[in-house]
Image (cartoon, rainbow, N blue to C red; front, side, top):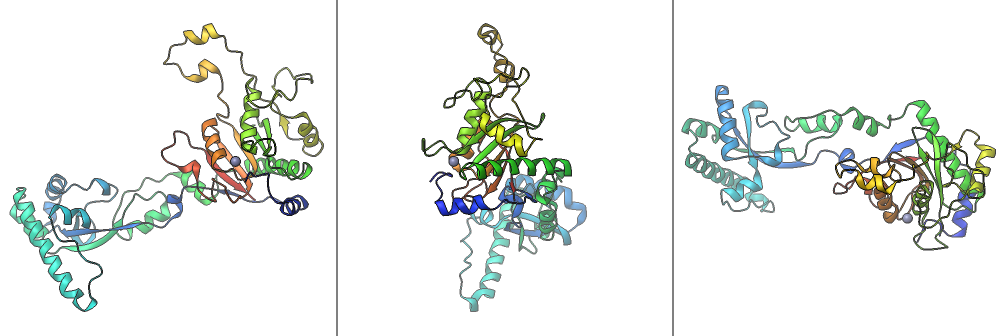
Length: 382
Ligand SMILES: [Zn+2]
């Protein structure tokens, strides 16, 4: 179901109330929101502290821990990480430690299992030519410990992770501010709330259809306005129409002819991506919202073809769709639209209503998918 195909009663409800917007919340990747995930490792004893560096280099040689590089190998109380339990069990060809064992026998089983690990590991390390005294100290006591599975992203996760085992952490001020929702100063906040209010105003004025605006944040100018047209075609969701209108403002576009062809065009700004009717309605109530995309230079084909392949596309073709732009949506985009926004190279997305099939926080977080070659930031305004 497209965003515009909501039941009539729901539409009416949305249309009635004029939302007072006050909050901007970052929609960030789950790895920034979740508590630290843990994994069990075996740890041994350093013994003589003077042997630490030798021991670390020997262990890195015989028992590397590539997936635990975020941890310090040596922890508190003279303990040192030997390796992930599963990895060591496989390496030492030990029987899998059964977590579902009978409670009465647990203690006996634990002790027996730990003794087996000790013996096997001692044998393995001595075979690897690690000095006897290092091995004997190391394997005198082997116990299980829980440690952080991944490197913490935020300070609160780091504090949590290091309560289990010392770990490395690279603080990132911007990530912290996204998590704390303090990215925007008061001027920026006011601007984003205002732009969303303008979208919602259009929605109320035009049959509760989903609306969107694409803004060049360097100029604070609206380059294009989009409206959901699912009734015309099933893929004409609001964000798809918006992207097409941005293309129109750059002398392209597949669906929409220029909205302004009959109007005198402001010499400095391209208004082709904005329907003059919406512009008129907004001018009445939002006189501070200004319009116009930066005109795209006509591409001289002979020049373009002579540009070396090493020069970037910007030099070749001018701005590409939504590169560097922010977009405001009354409704959370679906997966198709979220991917279209990825392809359009949008910079930031703001939305108001979460939707059932929303892909920027509700069903998934398409903007956080690692494998994609472009990522944008997402904020919910409410
Ligand atoms: Zn959609």
